[in-house]
Amino acid sequence: MIAIDLLNEKQIPFTVKGQDAIISCLNPEHDDTNPSLRVDKVTGMMHCFSCGFKGNLFTHFGAPESPLEVKLHRIKEKIAKTRSQTVGIQLPEDRIEWKGGPYRNISEKTLKIWQAFTWNVPKFEGRIIFPIRDVTGKNIALLGRLIVGGTGAEKYYIYPSGVKMPFTPAKVKPIQNRVILVEGIFDCLNLWDNGLTNTVCCFGTQQMDWFKLSLLKLQGVQGIDIMFDGDEAGQKATEQIKTLAEKMELSVQKITLRDGQDPGGFTPEQIKKIKTRLYG
Image (cartoon, rainbow, N blue to C red; front, side, top):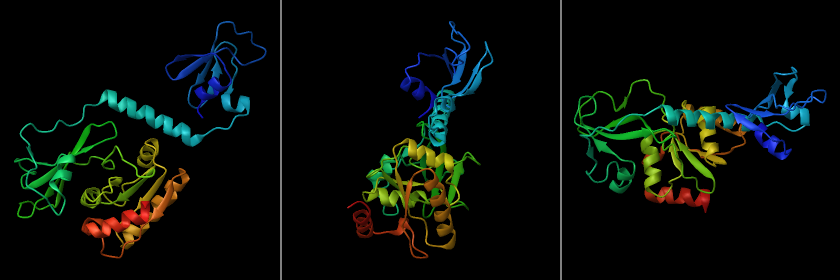
């Protein structure tokens, strides 16, 4: 519950001005015929600029606060602001849609859904490229993976340099209100291609944080199945995310992989067994 919900519950008339709700002062000694008490419509902090009365709406009514819900509401506001104020990266007009058939056992159909393409410019030549979008739907990065036989020192090239990558896809498709979290984009593509379309990748074990988990929760996700590499770094990151997610009231299941095993190398038969084990 946020403050504006409490006002509605108590049937207190209000008008909204920016971040505040304006109501008649709750000070019993103030006959406020011209409403002058400003209440933060999320946190409930309030101040009457006429008589000086101040406090917190939740405390005043003895109602429980929900710090998590307040934080999630702030994130919603941040998303709305980002949506209205940013334009994102325009996809190059001279890009060539991927039509090279399956790549690394990922079907051309899935690659098309993910809008894979090639682009004959320096840094991206000889790479299969994916647009990376944020939760508002805007392209914020281009990720190019070196194709076998291509030239270039780095297996992956990301433009722009230093961009903070979101989890991908940013708009998730939960199965039974759960998502699978993997490290790399081809881990994600392989599971996606074989029916686990609730898979998202976080581009490395150290890239998940409170904000990103909040974006999952805001999309109705109730649980996370973590499928990181079986090495020490992967298992350490799994424990860190598990601790953070549980504080956010997200259930977590660890899917332990053997050292050297990764989801990008699973066969269709292995993925089918995983899907049955997780979701029936």
